Structure formats: structure tokens, C-alpha cells
Length: 378
Image 1: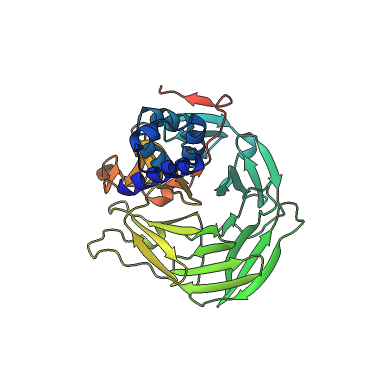
Image 2: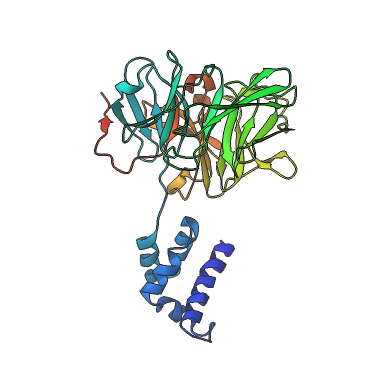
């Protein structure tokens, strides 16, 4: 709280200097409340959500201005792919509501990745992959990619962006890995083989994120592969996870991991249905996972294929990890609060397996809800 007050005071002092007031400390309370609304809006609008709330405690005038310029981010929605048919569901964790839409163009397709409001889908029968935006129904076709059924794949940015690159990796034989990349509009994939570590292996249980120009692939064998597309370089580092306590119940801990990226920092959540999740961040210099006790203003939304990291959420959603499971008749998403050090709902209800949730993924929330149908309790 003291740090927040210092930031608020710094804003006030800066505004005074802008007005040419040399007596920064004189008649402070009166000057703070008498600052021009235009200057207050200009400076308070640059604060993050936490400091905005602190600024609103200065006085009634500041409270009104802070509230008028307060901006909070929206959490992503959880999208459910149907096991049969073409009816997809969406869950809004902030309002705890479900919506649905029919997507006949996605029938028999499976999820591969999600980022920037786009899904990467695969139709296993013709082995075609394509981008799909569920809110505009736009489809962007990609070159045929064979032998993808058991591989991991990711992309760096929305397919409408010039910086969009798709990436997939698999071990061919021994210590050789095959990396394939392409951009939307390419006629075929670029395939390159690289010498790798013999213990580096990859499967659907591995995770990929794009950070600082690199695709970061963490394998279940605790090796981190880094691919720099601009330099066409591939490096592998052994980055083992710290061991869980000896009384840990989980027998398959290695495949219960989720990776997310925010602000150039790579985060990893290691979860078990019987233990509290552990959260780590990657120390790129030491090539080590560092356990962290708090996410601060950050919230992680994890799922089997891809994860999201969001700042400045309202209420009790901050400093939490959200899992792709909804309980209580679709009214409560499984959430682990790092502030409270507990699950919501209670941990005894969270006996879920990661493989049970491969048909759902987090995706950015739509701006317009008019085209969605709300799923009401029957």
C-alpha cells in the first residue's frame, strides 16, 4: 500500500510541476483536490488497475476521475468442442454464463492451439489444418501438414499479422529433430532437420509458447527447446522442474503442466488433482525454473493446448490460475487463488484429469454478444 501511495503522490507532484507550482508540499491536500480535471484524467488514465484504485482513495474528486478512466481487461472465455455434432459452447468466467453457437465447418475437427482470438484447427481425415475465428467465422487455409496427429503445433501471432509464423517439431530418429514452419499464404511447409539432445523428445503432452522471438518448447523429459525463426536456429537446454514434496499423490506429474507467456516472461503451472498447483517462471539467464508464490496483477488461464495470461482483471480473479473445468452445473470454473492458497470450489471437488479437458480451450472474449445464444438452465 505504501508503494501505491508513493506512486499517487508522484502523480500529484508531477501535475503540480506542470502547473509551475514550486511549493510542492504546501497546502497539499487542498492542491490535490483542486487539480484540473483534464490533467487528472491524463495522468490517472496511465495508471494500472491497482494504482487506479489506490488513487481513487485520495479524495472524492480523484475517486470520480479514477472511476471514469478505469479500464479493466476481460478474461478469456472457455470454448468447448463437441464430441459429436457441431454445437460449441462458450463459458464466460466473469459472468458465469454459458453461450452456444453452431459451427458446421468445424465438425470432425480438433483443437490444436489458440491465440489472439484465432483457433488453429485440424481435420484428421484429410489431414488439413486451418485457422478459424469463431466470432467472424473467417477461415484461412494452410498447406497440408502430414503426420501431425501426435505432434504439437503453435503460432506466434494472429494469421492476419505479418509476423505470424507456424511452428511444429518432432523427433525423427536418435538426436535429430524435424522442425517445420510456414506463414499464412505459403504454398508448402519449410522443413529442416537439426541436431538435438538425445533425451529431447516431444509429444502432445509438451507445451509451446512464443516469447521474445523464440518458440519455447518444454518437453515432458524436462528439456527446453528454443527455436529462433529469424535465425533458423535451434538450441536445447536441460531445465528440470523442482521436485514435488515426497507425499505428493500424483503419479503422472510430468504431463500435468501448462505454459503461458506475458511481457517476455514464460510461466509454467504444474498441477495435480490432489495437490495444490505450483507456479514457476523461467530464468532465461540461468536456464532454470524459479518457483514464485504470487502472480501479482496477473491471472493465468490454462488448457491442454494453449494458455493465456491476463492483467488488470476486476474482483477476485487476479493472482489466480483458472483451469478448463466448470462445476456446479456450469456455474463455477475451477480456480486456484494464490492469495488464499486454496481452490475454489473446494479442492475435494477438483479430482479432474488433464486428458478429460482436451476438447476445450481458452480464447479471447468477443466484443459483441448479440450473435451468441445464451445457454439457460433447463
